[in-house]
Amino acid sequence: MIILKIFCLAVVCIGACVLHGFAEPVATNKVQSQGKPILEFIPQSSAPTFFDKKSELFLKKDLWWWERDKKWHPELDEINVFHAVLQHKSVTERSWELGIGKGGQIYSMYSTFGEAMAPSSPDSQWNDEVWQFTSIYEPLLATDLPANPDDKTQMKFANSYIHQSGIYTKDGLKPFYSPLLAEDYNEQDRSYSVLNWGQIPSASINRSGILVYTKYRDLGAGVIEVTYVIYNFEDEPMTNLGPWGGVRTSVFPEHVISNPDGSYRYFTPWTYGYDKFEGCRANFEDTGGWAAVTANADNPYSHAIAVVFGKNLDKKGQHYGKPRYDCGDSRHGKRDYTVQATVILVKDKPGTPHMLRMYFVLGTLDKVAEKANQLADHADYEPLNLTEADTPLVSLYAKQINKDTVLSRNGAGKLVCKVYAWPVNQSVPLFMMKNNVTGTHFVTTDPYAQCEREPFKNPLKPGHESYEKYQNRIIYHPYRRKTDWVEFLGFVLPKDKADMKTYKYVPLSSISAVKESFDAGEKLDANSLRVRLGDI
Image (cartoon, rainbow, N blue to C red; front, side, top):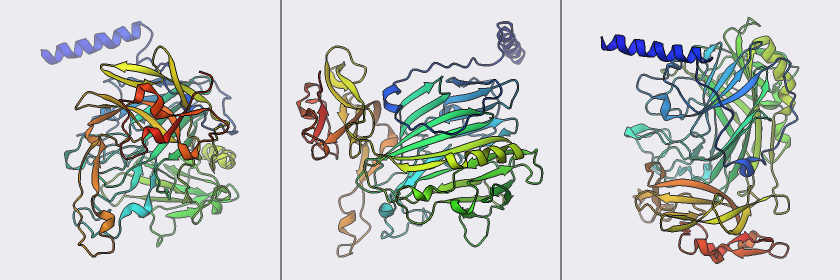
């Protein structure tokens, strides 16, 4: 009887939706956005669009219980990762959906082929089997530490990889996705942009200083442009710009890679990145700039998804080696996953923004190849040069939160200073944060300020050449949520990086709203940082 009542109630609810003219959650193009000035600098592209047939892009911020079962894993709840859905809708061409996770990652790619993204696992909940930006502070990997038998893939507590998505959920950890700092939906541009603070995906003695800007743009007819801008505000250079992702091998069991003339060949993936097997990696310049997964490589009308990475990206910036595409699958293992990754080893100068642009193309294999060839020259990589002269300012106001006076872009009353909206070269980000234990709010340039931590036990003995390197270190636990990242304020310049002769700067310490609330953490104090006064 109870089951019957529940069933009847569901029928009534769905029926009511139909009577009101819709049978699914209403999509919206409205999003509460604090990202307008912060995200507008992401470079535009000159790529062609494919709007021959009428279509619309919607942003949906609700995950309704009757939506499709994507078969992620019986122990996982999609609501933990869900942040938004981008829906391309059309009655005359293929529709698609992108599920955007809380870390800004693509965790779902759904169309007539079903769910393309691989199932996740309880130990890595939408952390690996997603499309995301990854990087690494390779010199910090601490290969001079003794190997830990419990973690043979990386030195325990010396992890220095960066995941846009978030952390691994081993040992009963709750999901923690890279904090979302800003977002913006642009209806006219048919794009959605987010800013996240990338995470080292496990407890570590190392720190992430990686901001990941991601812009998803609908170009029509199954073409999705993805633009990343990466800003590294730590002192250590990162060594790799590496969008990482893939698909379910069971949905797309075959793989092709383009030839320089635009044709394509069968490209059998094997163990990821293993040079012994031809078909695991290729330099961009030896391809036509794209690769694709497909249900049947011999059938031009089979479902396919292309990844367009470009051909000549090594001409921009400085590199270690040549940019390449890596792939591999786990059809002989436990994971239903074909990995696809691009590897660009850059000579990073910390404090320099890097832009990387790629494309997804959804459709039949013949049409995917045709569009991918048109897009290959529009994939891009380049370091950006953002200066004080060409970067807009955002206004900050004093804001009272309980007993704390802090800075906010959304305050009321008198404007107290201005900061840069974009990552000017050599600038550092400014945050307004909350300590969840004390309930106090504070301003800082250190996203690890006041986070939970513990002493690191040095495994080396005195006299070892690396003993001092690991002495008096701490392990960071930002994922335990002792702190929250309430508002991203913009960027400020260290005193020695600011053009004091041309622009009217004052010490951040001179702003009364931060005299009591600023916490330097492990970064520069307020007296060493400069903000603009301009004509306020």
